[in-house]
Amino acid sequence: MCDFHSTAWRLLGQEIQMAHDPNNSHSDMIDKAGWRVNQPHRPIVIFEAEWSGDGDVPSNGSLIRNSGECPEKLVAAIRRHYEKLKEAISEGKHLGTYFQEFEKYSDVWARVKALPEGVTFPAKCDYLDLSSLTSLPEGVTFPAKCDYLDLRSLTSLPEGVTLPADLKTLDLRSLTSLPEGVTFPADLKTLDLRSDLKAQLRNRK
Image 1 (cartoon, rainbow, N blue to C red):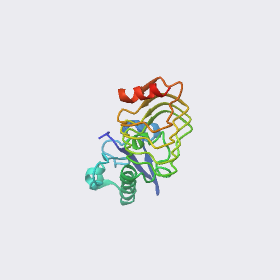
Image 2 (cartoon, rainbow, N blue to C red):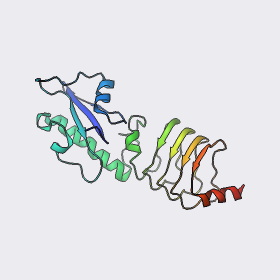
Image 3 (cartoon, rainbow, N blue to C red):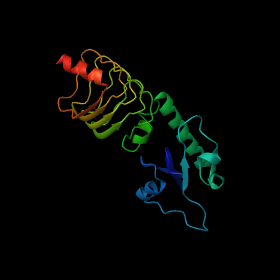
Image 4 (tube, rainbow, N blue to C red):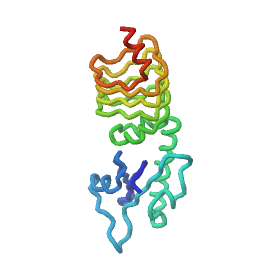
């Protein structure tokens, strides 16, 4: 285990607790949560889950390590989490609610193919990975400050799109055309863009 998308779970009394880290290391997320790890020859208290996000959510045995020892209440919660993950990736659902903690779920955002209308980002971030995104909704508002914005799968930008004012690196390698009026930040250091589109930019200046 320890690939996208990994989580760790435990039942503390009747309280369901979940740990996740975007690097998808079970040991890291358990350590950061401060949980006591499972001990040899003792009942399992922490259950690890993982799913690639491709296709349908798998069976309990494929989704949850030691699923046969996992309490039914915890199994149900784990399955709900991964059903939401499936909907977030394929339809852009739950991004403004369940997965709204961007830093915690940046691995999920990197797999999202479409954003919902009115989606909000943090005011600033180091790396905004939207590398699987294939379209942008009208009026999307990016963070004002972002060191690296990865939009490598986009083939077009909507009219009037506003990019972060403070942006150092922008990946638009798949873009096929430039909308009229699009402007790039003055302090942009690196722009990954087709050479003919870069020439168009130079001619507009």
